Image (cartoon, rainbow, N blue to C red):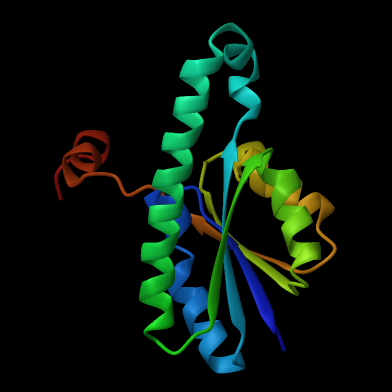
Length: 159
């Protein structure tokens, strides 16, 4: 039985695709859900040194947007009778996901990952790192990008 489920979200539709499964699992096991967004600041470190004021404004904007998104997702989950909390952090996504799982006492990490054709690209780099280093079970939902029907017809011919 899972008492606390950590759900990392990056604000994308892909990441949110795990939510229906998490809601079903949380309801069936009376689990608490912890929603986490990590602002990936690793890519902005050099810019911060060159333009500190601009980057600080960007950080503030990213944080406000992420917290607004987390609150909206939490509201949709809590109305279903599921206990939910949110966290926003700035750092390295995989590392912070693993740290929050330990700090919050989560016994499951549930996340979506993109689907790709080649085996080496099946998992995103964050999902791959979490899976490799997690001390609790990890539920991964592989999400395939839907191709528009026109593209399928062009590739495979009209039915």
